[in-house]
Image (cartoon, rainbow, N blue to C red; front, side, top):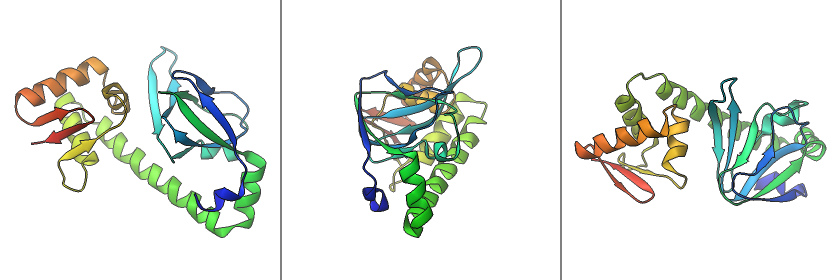
Length: 190
């Protein structure tokens, strides 16, 4: 956890589906998931959900709130979750005083930007089949074939901009064609 260990966090216990903060709420700090999963989402005027990021254990989120007056999205627990809130004033003081904390935050944000850019590239692919394959290839482990996930398939569908139904149909077709095999918690490119 590095320099963050100097800050005493406020611990929140969330039920599945509970909102940690909503767009427009005054910012109070950034967060780290201790257990569970929390998704950052925006809702369009038509109610359509756009997933921005899903944080799992030991992942930080809402770091940009340190430099904003209001949250720009909603944070919703996907499962029961324990979340640590690192208060804004203490976090900014640490960043001002500690070069290691600044580098740690910068590296984490850079990784998030790279992931977001990769996801945007996948979302630009028009064919559902090709979009799913591109996602699986991009997310494959070191063996180049296995994609492990601890969320739901619906989470992946939302992340790549497909309806869950279109995603499930595409997976079923790919499996029937022998392109993938599915097991609980992972998909293997064959």
